[in-house]
Each structure stands twice: as structure tokens, then as C-alpha cells.
Amino acid sequence: MTIDRWLSRIPIDSPSAFMKQLPTIAGFAIAAVIAVIPNGVPITDPALFWGGMALVAVASVLAAVVPWSRFHPEWTLTVPVLSLLAVTLLRLGTGSSFSPFAVLTLLPFVWIATEEGRVNILIAAVGTFVVLFAPLVIDGGTRTPGDVVRAFFSPLIYLIVAIVVNEIAHRMRIQLKAAHESAEQHQALLAQAVTAQDELVLNEARLKTANRLIQSIWNAVTEQSVIGTDLDGLIDVWNPGAEKMLGVTEKQVLDGKHHVIDFHLHEELEQRLQEMDARFTTVSSIDDFSALVDTVRAGSADVRDWTYVRPDGKRVAVQVAATPRLDENGHRVGFIFVATDMTQAREFARLKDEFVGLISHELRTPLSSILGYLELMRDDEEAPLSEEQLQYLGVAERNAHRLLRLVGDLLFTAQVESGRFPLEIKDVDLGGVVSTSVESAGPVAANAGVTLVSEVPDNPVVVRGDTVRLGQAVDNLVSNALKFTPRGGTVTVALRPEGEHAVIAVTDTGIGIPAVELSQLSQRFFRASTATRNAVPGVGLGLTITKAIVTAHGGRLDIASEEGVGTSISIVLPVETPQPVTDAIPRAEVTK
Image (cartoon, rainbow, N blue to C red):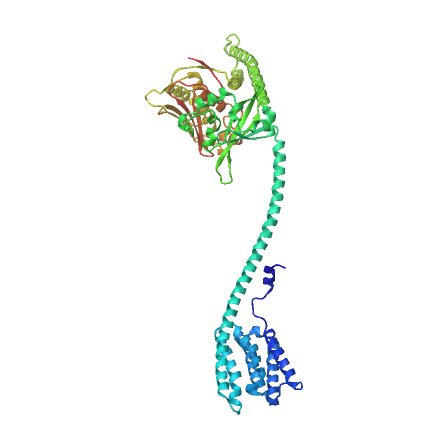
């Protein structure tokens, strides 16, 4: 058993009164045996002798029977005080001053002196004085000066001893209490350590399970390449998908020398750097790695199409999602690049666009023929049509024209996706483009009961661009605004110069578009939920075409909308010569 456990089993409180009385009981028992045996200590007064024995017996019974713990600690001194009186009677009954049993005074004296409190020193000294001085007072015999001196001198020595014993006992109590407190703290710390160890073992088991799960998931990601880098772009994470996609093992690439840009097409990085406006970059000097992480450094995730280059020279078309790597304190410590192989997807898209283009070409010819013959039937003077027949013919012509416009839109989107559609660049007065578009949409607005407002400045706003395509873009926005605005609403087409840009804003008071759908509006064939709920006609190509035209002119399309309030779509064009190189359209055929 350790010392701490041994100390923890010792009660801090003093022993019981009976335990303290046991030495006195043993001393009186020995005195009784000595007194009754032949040639022992003579009993001079049997009544006083046996009275002392009876008194110590009463004190012992009280020590054993009375529940002293319920009383104030000072009440327990009743037992040793009675024992001192019993010693006095015992001395008086066995020769008074000559009694050899005066030594029994030490037993209750030590008990009283060791009790907590300085007053017990006085009680022990007074009790000893009574024991030693009583025989001189009660005994009527001759008292020598030595007896008187001993009667007064011995209590003084006992007083000094009581002071020493009381102080030693006091300090031992303090030390014992401190030892118990230390043992309790040690036990508490030990219990906490055992609990912490158990939790550590449990957490370690959970961590191993989680690591095995993460490793299983990590190894299962074979169709996406996951590459992790530090802040400078050095690769330190390489998953099985990256090994499969790029043909380099984890051991080969994690040598601290491979940089993520080593697997990128250099021309694409240079093109991206050219597109990055230096005012919005997050680094003081632009390098190739900034082309990959500039948006991420600014605090946003970045999803972009890139081309990976394998060591064997093979190129892989990928879509890469770049995100920051954070430590446990939320500080950025690197970057993660998750790439998906888009080779098949792009091939499917190319085939689809080719199919759409082919079908569009094939449909335009018969539609043009149908419209031609319908026009001949309308203008035939030799066999004029009746009013009812002309009405039927008008319905056929309107639907044929609508179908022809749809075919034209499909063909145009196919050209957009392929990266080639014609642009005839020249100086364009946007005021004329806006006025022509508003004038053309006037009858439609009147029939729909919508107020169409044009706000064009007096001074010309000139940009470099394709007049027809820009007019097509504005027509699409105005047409959409009229379709989405109920009767009694207003559509405003405003042109305004803003520094180095010209802005054409089409604002309506229509049904609006949910905020969560705004980012999808420029996708082909996407239609807002408000359009489908309100049965607004359309196929979802207008904004796709408009964005392609605006992007090809080096501009951008800003969309703001609130459901039930209205929508505002702005075409923002640079006043200088447009650069028809964008993310959405790889290249456009420009004629200057």
C-alpha cells in the first residue's frame, strides 16, 4: 500500500475518547494489581483508594458510551479531568505524598495537553497542580519544605511540558491535515488522469477508425484528381485520382520539387494572366501560380476550365475547383485543386452542338421554302384568297416565322459553343440601337398593355462593336422584359455613359426571378420558376445569346431581380475597342 493511500485511510479527526482513555485504564489496572498483591504498595485509606478506582471506571464508561462527536470537542475533557481526580484519590489512599502512583498523572495530562486550543495548557497545568498539591492540603502529617517546593515546582514543569506538547500536537495536526489534503488532491488528479487516459484511448480508437474511413474514401476517389499545395504552389497532397489522370505516382510527385503549374498548359496560364485586371489581383507581382489562385486569395472559391498536361505530353481537358486549405485556427496554409476530367463531356457537347447546327441548317431551308410559298399564295392576284383563308395563312406565317427564329437561335448558340460566330466591328451609336429596339417593340408593348419608356442621352454614346448583334442583344432583353411584365406595368430602357463604359439597362416591374436562380439564367434552355408558373412563353435561349454577344464585345451582363418586384438587366460595354476573348467564348470571328 502506498503512503498516499495509507494517509488517506487515517481520519483527520482525533481518535475517539475511549481510545484516548485506554492508557489511563491500563495504568489504573496496573496500580490496582500492585496495591492488592502481598508486599505491594500499602493501601492507607481503602475508601479513597477504591473511590479513585471507581471514579476512573466512571470516566472510562463515559468515554465509551457518550457520543462525544455530537458535542463540542471541549466537553470530552470531562473524561481526563475525572481521571486526574481519580489519580488524586488514588494517591491519598496509598500514602499521600509518598504514593508511587503520582506518575499516573501523566496519562490524562498528555490527553488534555494534546487537545487543540491554548486553554487546554492551563487546564492540564491546573489539574496537575491539584493532583500534586492536594495531599499536602488534605494530609495532616508533617510537611517538609521539600514537599512544598515539589508541590509548586512540579506543576510549573508540567506547565512547560504542556506548552511544548500542545504546540507539537498543533503542528502535527496542521501537517496531517496538509498530508490528507495532498493525498485527496493526488487521488483526484489520479482519477482525472485515469479518466483522461480512458478518453485518450477511446479518442485514439475513434481517430484510427476515422483515419481508416478517410483513407478508404480517399483511395476510392479515382475519377477526380485532388491536388494539395502549400501557399507557394508546391504539391504536398496527391490522391489516386491524380495518379490516374496525370500518370504520376504519389511517391514520384511528393518530393518537394513539383509545382502544380508543372501540369498546366502554359498558354492557358498566360491567357488568364492577361485577362486578370491588375487592380483586382491580390499579390504585388503576378506569376503563373496567381492565375490559378488569385480568386481564392481574394476569399472566394474558383471553378474554371483548364487543360492538364501529362508527362507524356497528352492533354486532359478538366474543370478545376480551387479552394483554400485552412488549419485548425482558420488560417490559410495552402490550396486544394479538385479536377474532373471533362474530355468526354466536352466531346458530347461538341457532338450535340454539331447536331443542333446540322438540324438547324436542315430546318432553315424547308422553313424558308414554306414562307416563300405562303407569301406567293398571299400575293396571287389570279386566285385571291378569302378573308378566312387569309386569316389561316397569317397564323401559318406567324408560326413559321417563330419557328425560323427559334432555328436561328439554335444555330447561333451552336456557333457560340463552338467558339466561332461572326462579328463585324465598327463604330456603333448605342443611342440608335436602343431607339430602334424600343420602336420595334412598341406594338408588342401596346398590345400587352405595358408602358415602354426610352431614356437616351442627347450626346451620342459610341462603342466599337457589331450593330446587328448588339441590336439583337437589346431586342432580347426588351422582349423578355415585356413578356415578364403584366398588364399595367412599365419597362424602361435606359442608356447612360459611366466612365470608360457604356451601360444599357432594361428594367421592368414584372414578376421577377428568385435570387437562387439568377446564376443559372444564362444557361441554355433554362427557364425561371416564375416563368413556368405564369406560363410565360419561351425556350430559354434569349439570355444565353445576349450574354454571348456581350461577352464577345468585351463587356459583361449584370442581373438584379426580386421576385414580385421586377428585374433589371444591364449590358456594360467598354468604350474602347473590344477584345473578343472571354471565358465563355474562346474566340469570335471579327471583321474590322
